[in-house]
Length: 316
Length: 274
Ligand SMILES: Nc1ncnc2c1ncn2[C@@H]1O[C@H](COP(=O)(O)OP(=O)(O)O)[C@@H](O)[C@H]1O
Ligand SMILES: [Mg+2]
Image (tube, helix red, strand yellow):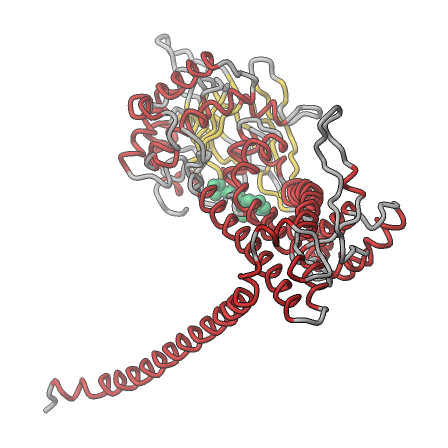
């Protein structure tokens, strides 16, 4: 006679096998979790050591004297005034060229251009441009802006070189921000009689500002640390004067002479100090590096806040 | 392919038993539509009566949405789409597919309500005001008045009057859809197109929208795509049955549901396919 137990034998053996397999999968899962955690800690650790190292040798050097002095042969009297002013002027040029051009190109490619082989080709090439070594942008700028257009080894030429460098980043960020807006929102605007431009201006741009601004800030924090293209076009490493002021006391109150002034920038000043012998110049370099790092971290922080703030009111 | 001529039976009679021809609002003539090389509508001819609700039914993929979107030229937004035939808007009888007709002008006369509520991530007020602003209205007082009117007509005013400047996304799904209706009717369009407007809503929200549509036909002509036959039966005056891109039968809703003239219509209505 068969008892109930006879029927259960087979399924329960199966169950045991399944249980064994499941526990193996769980252990793989656990191991992967551990490895992932380790690599995360490792990466963050390296970053932390880098920061601590810079802080240890540079922090003591950062004071008003350091921020407000020109470079000098005597390490203790040297400062980064011309470097950070140069960096800010460069960023102004870079942003005022790369942002409008990049956002416009992103809007065009995403909202206006037909999707065909030609635009696929452009898309691939923009992605490629983002990967071109920065020194090549420097060479291009040297030939084009410095010699061809005769801008000289100026803030303008340097800013334009950096603008070319980060343009692909801005374009890609713009397109990605636009792509997160559902088609239904565009259609709602079009169905009410909006033109493409009105849809962009009234809806798509406002709804993607957070994403675009984040991309722009990340692009700028890439540009701010670049030295290769600036050295290539001939930025000076020792500058003991400031470019002419953009704001004047008497009419016309504005001047663009600073655009054509020679310049230096933070990474170049750093590079200059690092290549000098002597403990003191090394700590100057570390201080300049720390300052640059803090600016970059600050910019990334602003990017995060901006995205949070802009995204707060936007749900689909 | 040989187009099947649609049977058009009016059926409405006045007291003396004389058939009453309703005024035609949208006259669709031999309309064919192509997504690239893919022909999706085949020679559709249909007279949409003014101030009535016309329902379009048919199995999924038969071309209801495609037909609806021909009427406000939404297909122009995407490359490779092609229309043939004509769609005349009465009175006047201008062909909205005709050469030189600006799709933007067409869209300003046809409101559209989509399958899923799609309010802009702006305030309730700005959602309703947007169409008016596009048409050049910018005086606060005019806008206030028209926004209130549209919200009243979409039975939303009492629920939102105290929070007009809050985000539309804080509303429930049904309220959002009524907001989209308010947005579509704020500019006083001639025709309002609905594409399965209740398919994402619960039964209570659905019945509110249905009431609204019936109420609305006093002021506008309504065309509604629905896959819900009961809904078509409840709210429409006329029904068009489509199948594989063709209009099979078009007539008074009661008559179509009780006494369809075509075997395909009967099969669909009795649930034998679709
Ligand atoms: N954008 C498009 N491109 C190509 N084919 C489409 C597109 N949209 C719909 N179709 C096709 O057209 C036919 C009709 O679709 P649709 O009008 O959405 O049907 P319905 O609304 O009746 O379900 C379907 O076969 C569908 O696959
Ligand atoms: Mg559909």
